[in-house]
Image (tube, rainbow, N blue to C red; front, side, top):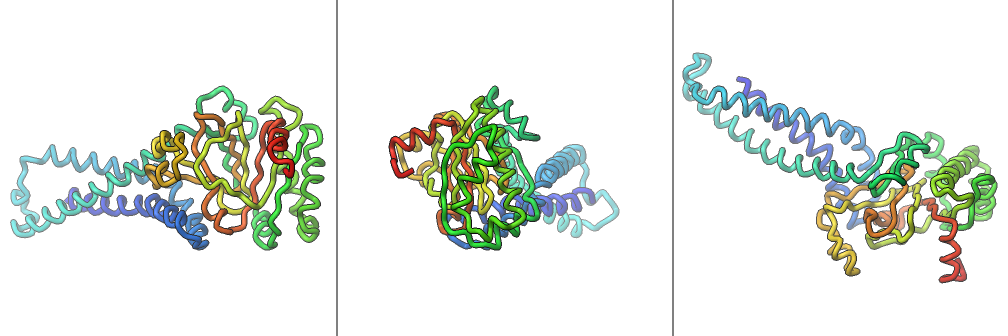
Length: 336
């Protein structure tokens, strides 16, 4: 009876794991080729399920091992020797167990692939507990450091209700006067009805604190600051700067492709995304309000602007670079 009920349990958990992890991946792939905004909102509802993924995978593995152990231990015992059922009932039960186990094995294989791809990506990421933790990133081999943050309740209303006219602004922000520098850079770009919102000052403070952190990280008294609603990095790429800090305040976060899911040779040869991506299911996204510092150069993680942002979905991104970055861009583009 253990095998009978555990086979159904294994099947159910396998389907649940595929739902919590496989379905969001499927929706992610669908959103790559469409502009269906409901897909993006639907993906956000699976965050709680994804949080339970390691536990589901552990339970599935445990039940698999128990069933295999039970089978080895009882392989010489015939079902009909047990007086609890007839030979016909026994045969029917054995067929059900075998069918469930085959299906569960297929699901377990799929789920293992998904889970392991996420583990590989996790090994490239330094998860920070606070802003001070970013300093550890400089002395590590990680490709990216991320501080996950909850979106403030007031921020949802602030960014979702008003329709901000497409804008971008750039300049230098200092460690000493970060709040004033940011406010001066963006006040003429943001409509007055938004500037008068009570959350506006909190937003400036948040950007100011991140800029201070990045100044200390870079060991500079000033950094290059860019804030805008138009993002256009269509191709997967690495940043040719030592470090770059990104925070998405509105819309979907930056799209990332781990090394194991990418054809780095195709990338280096300038080939299109279709040839660079080896495993679409491994693509991941930063969340809104996450703070991420990307390591630049050839060893950086491949990333790009999410398709939703390029297809017209409203988006606001803050990008921070070394102080010299804006000066270099101005040499190339005098209108910058």
